[in-house]
Length: 203
Image 1 (cartoon, rainbow, N blue to C red):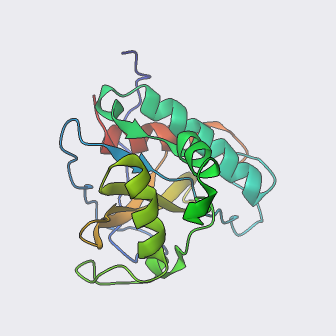
Image 2 (image 1 turned 90 degrees about the vertical axis):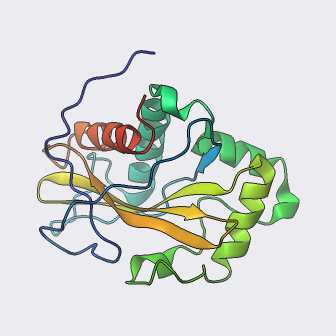
Image 3 (image 1 turned 120 degrees about the vertical axis):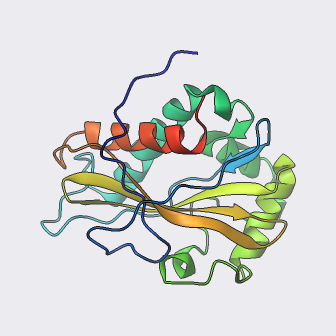
């Protein structure tokens, strides 16, 4: 399957709870077993830079989130390792057909994960129940929850968590950064999505 080549030289992965850190140590997300079904949820939030600019030059949090979700869909579609993954558009469509779940995948109770937390602790409510209902629809135990996208150090940065819903545990939490780009350039979000896919589901 065709993949757009992207250098990984500028990849920055943050330790859990280090959203504001300037030079965090690099760590890798846990490997996902080949063929394991994984749900990638929609991006939950976007934060402007100190000048009020939004990553991708979109002009608003909502448009930044929509653009990054679209870029993530494309990037994971290019990775053979994501053949069994369900991406945000399919998640939204499935939940819309099952309103009794009572879950809006774009408005989850994610904020507690942005604070420093012990990854050995169980997920809090109502997030655990929300994720459990989503996972049950897709027959999976692993979900990727993109928490917040921001722009700093001339890069778009996505804070995210990889969660084992069955164990009610955060397996990994950190951040992935795109390539150096102007905040107003869509390239900032394109490279971020490509690096996310390359790290989580390499072909």
